Length: 339
Image 1 (tube, rainbow, N blue to C red):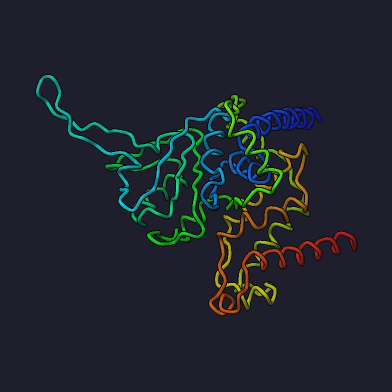
Image 2 (cartoon, rainbow, N blue to C red):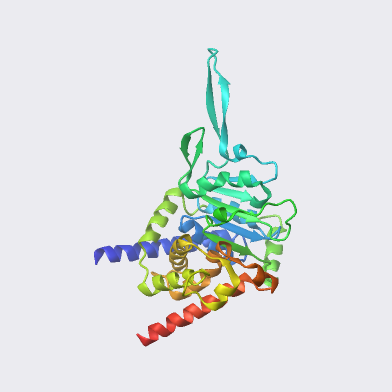
């Protein structure tokens, strides 16, 4: 009983601190509360986020503000076609000492940080993109046969322009799967855009203050994994993820007819962590079915694809995810009522 009470107290204290962090972020990154919640969800879950949106929507500002508020050592890399893996990871150089002897010295690249912003990640060549694969999964890199750990915690927030495809290289499926969430950054509404105009075109600009530090975030990630998840929510996560696999015998007809390939077990793991983070951000002690429904798109959009026929018919992947999610949620509700 005492352990449960302690867990509740820790979750409530973390919820208050997260509310303070969100308030600081909102002082610079105005509006777009859902985007802020999803990015914080990725950080609390110990994962990475892929921000997709048009230029000028504040993606870079958001990452810079997060670095300050969360107290993380941030680094930014502008991805370009001529960027090489060594420009990100670092390299060994032959150095001559004062006594004339020579030895190799490793010079760390910008990836040796706690929060890496990979700006326009799809502009780099596949060779350079692959340099992030090991880092994103194992939180270390191997250079010249030596394993070198990265910062703790280590997160990648990558940005991508959805419309300008000339001179870009689509991210491979293996790399997309390493992003916990795909976060859509859309145009602000009129009132939010008015607030942005007034706040950013005057003499003074908002300054964010630090709320967390690296140790606080690591502790929050550990606490999140201790948060209880009800059996009904676990079953809903499994039902949802498996419903998007076209070769599964229990998959709905729309999946079998429209989906080319579906999400793997990493999607279920991501959803399990993300629903806990969303509950924390809302000040709740446990996730609900609504959390699963709200996070279905961000978790699944980049982990599956429509078949050629579905694309030719003009089907939308997001609409397919919404339809199947609503059906699975309704089935789960009926099962609960029957029980």
